[in-house]
View (cartoon, rainbow, N blue to C red):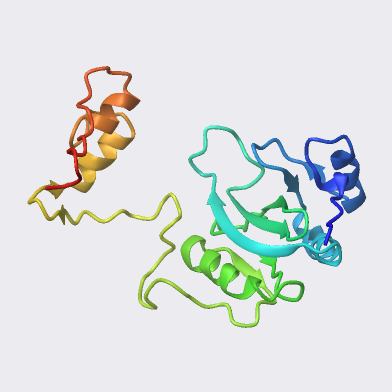
Length: 213
């Protein structure tokens, strides 16, 4: 069976911009083919994509409160849609309208279009706090019911419980974070040193000949 590829969905062809224009969306400056979709147009665009054969694979929430570049809103949701015939992918970036108290606004649920949005949006709600209006069962899916807040928000307090590894080493959270962001050489000096531009990082261990002993 031969599958006919639609050149409009190829981001490397001139027709791609025309296809986005037909959907009524604007291209987003991103490494992957991404369209900016206003919250009020999300259901309309999603219905057009489903009629064209696209399916919803994933939905993730983003918190731009500590981002270096100014964004239209603090939160956005990125919907990953995929066409199974020609393997084309399109990301829908939808900024969440800011609420008066800054806690995050609402977006329409994609459940009426793609039933797979059920658990995907519940995860975004649980971890990022984005509310999806019209969702049939919007409740937590990963964290305990008595956990206050949303763990993937930038202002969520990070715990300070040391982690014990099997070889007896402890990972101290504060030291680990300092190494990862380049504030110091970090716990081992390896990753932190790289981020600080130092060239004397220890080499990673080499597997002995014949496998582990």
